[in-house]
Length: 553
Ligand code: C2E
Ligand code: MG
Ligand code: MG
Image (cartoon, rainbow, N blue to C red; front, side, top):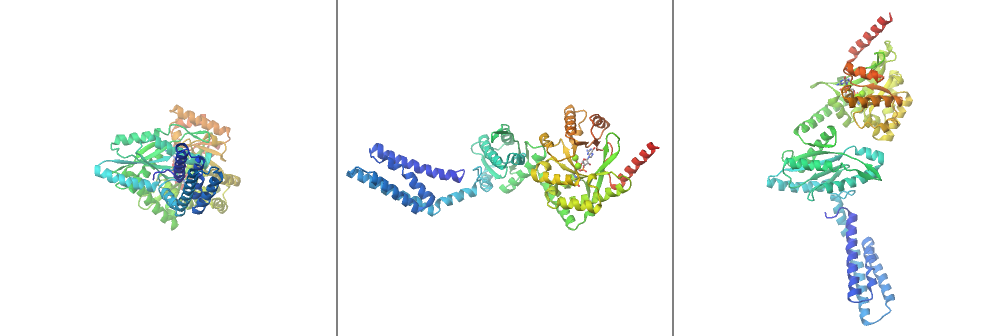
């Protein structure tokens, strides 16, 4: 419990040994004026031999150094002889005792006990140890009728550090983060590394809500300073989830699991902040479970009829013509009615049910668009959203090829939309798959650009053809000057990189004019049309064709 890692523990034992040896040798040489001062330094190798290799090694080295002492003792007065004999006896005793303790696994037991309660990398207590300390503190808090806050700290985008700088750098950062937390918090704070990039904290004796918030702010502020990893400056933010005893849980397990929900909410709310647990979060979780169970049952029974695809037109800015459609998934839930992706896509991704569902989406959309292509909309393009789990699935490439062959769909009319995080995560492998898809002739679109990390640096290296400017950026255009400037730069950068640009979520004429002026290639949004069921979209296509025929006449 006392030491941060087993190396510290060993270093401590060796240190004690050196200290004792030095004291003894100084005592003999200075106080007794004994000439065998040098003999004192032999204790260290004898101890180490016993410590690392056991009794026999301890004894052998003790005898070896005794031999040296005897060889060196040129003076043979009775006093020196006595001192030499005393020295040799202590050598043998030390070698034997240290070796015997080693063989009895006395040290190892201590080390194993230490490891069971500590994190090897940072030396901090681990989750098990944290839970035990928290349980004890809760008994005290209950007796005193006090509040007790538990904090879960998660590093934002830690994955990027690992992916970009490597795992060694990631480990170094975690060690520095643990030091930063120790420095930021009071001495009696209990800090633990619970897993990966997650740390748990509680501070005893903090009872007021204001003080609880101040501690959260202190933790967040301590991350404003840069970290130096491999001589590079790294800035990182954190998301903190907080649960408070007794309101949010009465035992360590429920308090910790509630901090987890709160932390996830803090991430959803844009990271770099804290969030208290609320009972609604519990409701969210049970809703997710409910959705997940229903969805799993549907997929297992292959009841895909409950799903439906709506299609939203993608319009060419110059001509105002529909050039393609984006397939968007809907779910006719037996009890809940029509559900939109917001309610179920995340669950489908978390449960990996998106893999079979996504396959159904691609198949169904290709069949539908092929029908329209045959009906004189020959070059109509199809966009399908792809989740990371699909891209990572080993069968994905094969599945896409099978669908294309079965539906006789022209690959150059198919666009697969991925988000930036999908492209960045698991960098090499995902990029490889995207490259393969492009070789087949499929076009790749980067969806929701401008909403997340939006790394301009990576933009040039990703194998994409199309950039979709995110709705959240578009909705404030043209009145928000800064956002308009960002959109302008994104469009000009994308044009320089030879990407086509689609502005998503265009709702007003002012936005349309803005994108026309910026020479954006395509727009998509309610201004032109909402996502529509196939029949209604077909009507829209027919209407457009009539108009063209009319203009032609
Ligand atoms: P997305 O790919 O960015 O799709 C655009 C979303 O913006 C759609 O929401 C669409 O209805 C909405 N939208 C379009 N124009 C406007 C507008 O003018 N104003 C506003 N406020 N919204 C507009 P939807 O259909 O709810 O889909 C949400 C997200 O769910 C999609 O975002 C996509 O990421 C995901 N999704 C949808 N279908 C699938 C699917 O089949 N597979 C996967 N993996 N994800 C899907
Ligand atoms: Mg999309
Ligand atoms: Mg989008």
